[in-house]
Amino acid sequence: MCESLRKKCTCGRKTAEIFFGRMILDERAVNGVYCPQCSNGLPIDCDSRVWDNGWVLELKMDVIKERAPIMEISPDRVNADWVFDQGFVTWVGYTPDDAEHRNRERAEILELARTDFQAYFTAMKEWGINREKRFCEQGWRKARGT
Image (cartoon, rainbow, N blue to C red; front, top):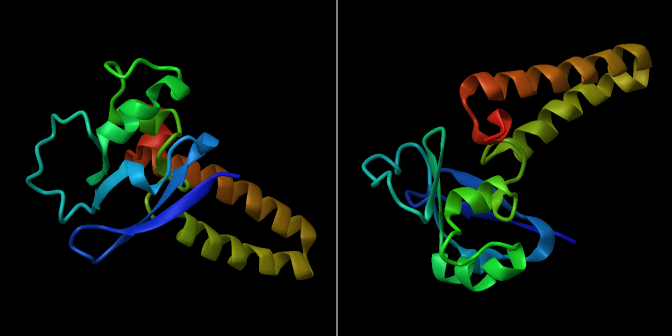
C-alpha cells in the first residue's frame, strides 16, 4: 500500500499532500515544500527541487540517490524532476491540494445520484474532463504529462 504525507509549506500558510508511489520512498525523502509565496527567490536551477506552478517540492537527494537502484536509475543520473514525474514522490492528484478540493467537488456531485442517476453520471463525466482540462490550462505539471 502506498502512503501519503500532508506537509505544510515553509511559511506555514498552506499544506501540500504528497504521494509516495511504488513504496520505495517515504517522508524521509522530503526536505520541504514551498507555496508560491515562500518559493519566491529560491534558486531555480537545483537538482533537488521540482517546480510546479509556483509550488516547489524539495527532496533530500542523499536519500533519493541511496534508493535510485531500486527505482532503476543510476544515482548520478537521478534528480527531483525525474522522481516526481515517475510518481515516486509527487502530489496526491494534480496539485498540492487537489485531494482536498476533489473530495469536496465530488461530494457535491454525488448528491445528484440520490435523485437523478443519469444527471449524476453526466455531471461526473463532465467534471472529470473539465477539471483535467482546467489543470492543463493552468500549467500543472502532472496535467501536462511532463
